[in-house]
Amino acid sequence: MLQLNKDILYLIFKELQNDKRSLFSCLTVDRNWCETTVPILWRNPWKLKRKILSNVIISHLSDESIENLKSHGIDFFADHYKKPLFNYIRFFKHLDLNNLNIIIESIVFDIEKSEFSYIFSSIFSIVREEIFNLFINENMRFTHLFIPQQLDYQIHLIPGARLCFSELEFLSCNTRIDDEVFIGLIEICKSVKELELTIEMDNNNYEIVKLIKATNRLFNIRLLIDGYDESFCKLLEDSLIKHANSMRYFKLTRQPATKIISSFTNLNKLELSSTSFDNMTTWNCLNNLSLPFLQILKARCIPVKVLTDLIKNTSGHLAEIKIDNTFHDEINNKNIIQAIYKNCLKLKYLKLLIKNSNILELEILLVNCQYLNRLYIITQNEYYLMFNWNHLFEVLTKSSPTSLFGFKFCFNKAPRLESLKLFLDNWKNRHSMLLKTFLNCYYMVDRDWSDEHLNLIEKYKTQGVVEKYDHVSIRRFTVNDPS
Image 1 (cartoon, rainbow, N blue to C red):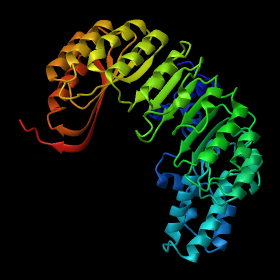
Image 2: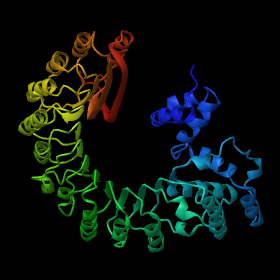
Image 3: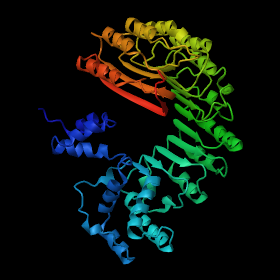
Image 4: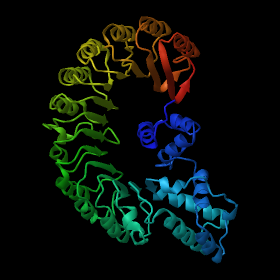
């Protein structure tokens, strides 16, 4: 095989960065492939088991650090750790200080079991200083930084911190952040392009707006609201106006205090959610909202009427729509389906509740949206009226565009075995299907999704009709079939 140089390999492997299974297989090909793959795998390793990360961190401590720890009577057998083949720490691009603190605590617990003693506190401070110095120095270049609410360490004072964070693009922190830590952040976070803020009910640091003003250009904002502090939210939203022209992605987990979204006219992606159904009649901030460049819309517990109006006010660029936990009547269901097939001809992914009476409207959508490749349908049985699976499956097999091959079905009453079999029979000689089903109901009978369903789908997998299948069953309460 033609030998590819490392630069080309890196570009190829970077495209696989979210496909860990494929990357792990690349490690065993040869030395070149291994040396190119390892840095990509270790860019963001914080989802690895903490024990693995702990061992890796300890094995990278320098001889000087080990001697310094020993001089304080701290010896966690670092001598027994062999120096690894690669300097894995150097490959880190994401620094998660919350997870790092937890790892440091676990290391210290192994040394001193008395969790609340003065000895623990003293040892923790010494070990943390050595490990923080291992990560924050002039040889490291982080692009992502995650800061926990309780951080009391002024990381900007560590030698080499300015160089270490000079390429920082993403910052996640809590708005209760300590003043001394916050002041240092302003100095090192001017290059940040993406900001994630967790907002609390009270005790928020109003100086956070200085951080927003200090950044040169913000493209992505996530406001995760754990508690509503109206005056703070207003101040925060007003400070974001500076970045209105550059904003491309905005996420909000509660109705905004101002009409800030209307300022983000260049948005490509909008993600909105509410934690309860109390606000289902509100979100008036979306009325008459025009986002002509919007490509992705995700909404959870947002009134469907305002979402319908929003879709109408886009300019045909929407390629992905996910609308979840937004239960509504047949008229509103019809209106939003019509808004989609009249205004979203480039649509590739759709997640939506479909009512029995609007299956024919779905058919028009399938005919109009010829780029659709994945469809997630949420169904409901209402007032003893069973969902018409036969009609749905007939429409899908008859009118789906050739590009459509991915299906997800969420239901509280499964389709009959005969209906499912007919659907799969009629899908033969088409693109192999990616299929996933969700059984989601408070009360369900044991036979709702039986082994017979699973065996039937396995049969069609062997025939190539179904390429991949998964099933998720959310059983809050399970009762026996009374019949």
